[in-house]
Image 1 (tube, one colour):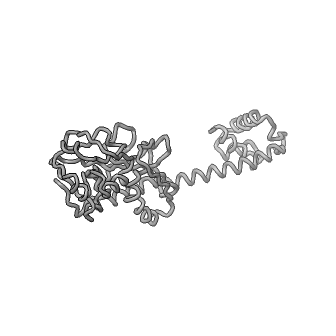
Image 2 (cartoon, helix red, strand yellow):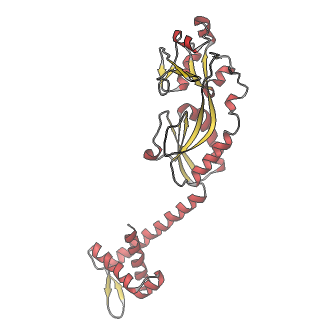
Image 3 (cartoon, one colour):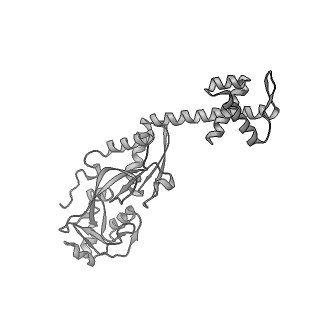
Length: 301
């Protein structure tokens, strides 16, 4: 492809200047080099582009049509390179961002207006799902993930901590009693997150098996069921915090610590365009310090 573009550039200059030697001087090529490029073009296209005489060069009908096409294509290439160069220094273009569903709806989507105001040349395509997407294969510029990260070539930056709480509605606890140790969970209806709870619920350095009559791939759905009194949930504080403050849920002290998971931004390796750098800096500022969803939230130590 590079040889074709160079050939187009050489031919366009020959057509404009009407001389192999003049085109060579303009492009920093020898007259022989220019001649070889034009001959290669004619051989590949299977047609003559120039009428050659000892006095001057003239374009054939095919040469005129090809020359006009070269001018358009070369102009588009120059424009594309200018756009790419601008994008490297100025935040612009479409940012493809993938985030977990509930976290995206609660914490990312409300922030996008502020980002748009600061970076009006950037539009965001927001992907909302809880599965672990393949950034490179699926073409995402940036992803937010919650939990431990496996070995990967992706570039990761920690944004905030994510505390896990075990909660239940007051009505459920009045009917079924309050567990005070992880071993007692086997006596309760535990609502499980299908994408992470397969091995049970972790407390300290141990994982305890749990079971219940509801499993779902979305934490917000489980929290809604818990508020309705269906059972216990083991969910992030950004999801249960409002319900805890409102008294709809009660945080349980089981005498063992629940995990604190990292919330991370992930990016493909290599050079990152300005739009990605700008959004990463925006997220870092937004989540700096103690997460706002944990402020004034009383939880077991």
